[in-house]
Image 1 (cartoon, rainbow, N blue to C red):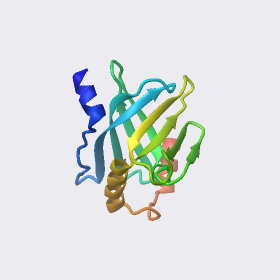
Image 2 (image 1 turned 90 degrees about the horizontal axis):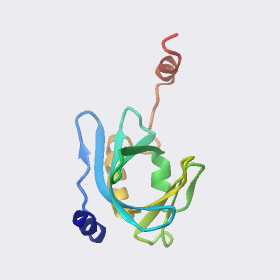
Image 3 (image 1 turned 120 degrees about the vertical axis):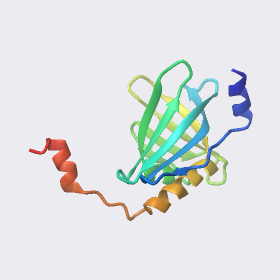
Image 4 (image 1 turned 90 degrees about the vertical axis):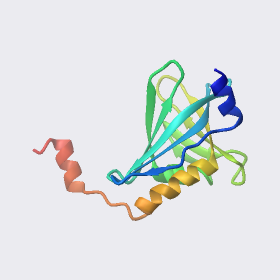
Length: 154
């Protein structure tokens, strides 16, 4: 528990890793406020794979539970640093306006809702690493391969 208190006061980050396989991973500490209650520091792994260029996966290592992974649109993550975005299960906005130091992500699964606070500078660092692999606006998807996968090579 002392480890969590230390990280709550001073988030620990690991630099993004650009692997030869085209994957970027960035571990950062975020704050989870389930149903708007206490803030709990949680380690999250933001991951990007150039083979799925529109998506970012965020895995939360929750205390006393298994890892929970959400898939975000990379554009939602980038735009949410500057203005409110999203609808449905995932929404994001800068905290205290565009000049604030944190962003809020609201996750709304069928079982309830959770508020995640994350340092905007950490998200910006992660996004810059993803954009070195695939610049925003230059993502391409092989629709034929996608359809073959969905249809089971029918």
